[in-house]
Image (tube, rainbow, N blue to C red):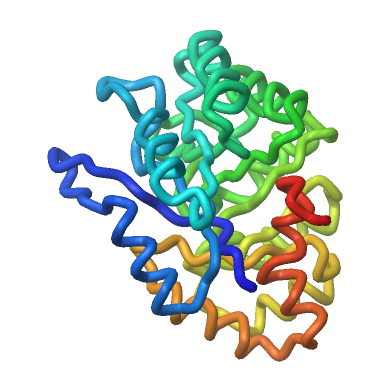
Length: 246
């Protein structure tokens, strides 16, 4: 069984995005992936309504395939925290997604830390976009990990193209940081990450539909991991983090 820890569903024609749930489900089928965490491309709250509801409805349509995360904009302060609380308690979502590049705010800003603290209090992880752009760099997100040590923080894309080694270094420093493999093009660095922090702190993800889940699975399989390590990346770790492990 494989669980993809980072994919997208959304329909926002104004921005050129049309990825209804059927798109990612088809890609999951092609890659023989059983389930996937899904989130929108847009943040909530925001100018468009029903972003949280869109994810909730997608999960209702595919309850055995999709797991919802709420993508939030900390600039809305208490309103964002309250909406995130509803997303977890009322809509059954399982995590927080933060994409600081879209709302232009440092990962360790106080409004962002408020959301991360609330996610930790609810027992759900925080997934950051972690790449090569300002406000998404591993060293910047590490400040949030230091500020909220009881929060489980996932570095989505584990530093992108040019900051992967920084992501591995900060994960060695902060035990509440988890690395995630999507949209990062170096299989050998997946193995380096496993050797540096342990297979229990690395997740498989694809960032589909933007990246092809089939290729992202093959990337992990080319990393030279043991069968037991692959099993943790592909399924065991995310199940444990989301409370699915038996």
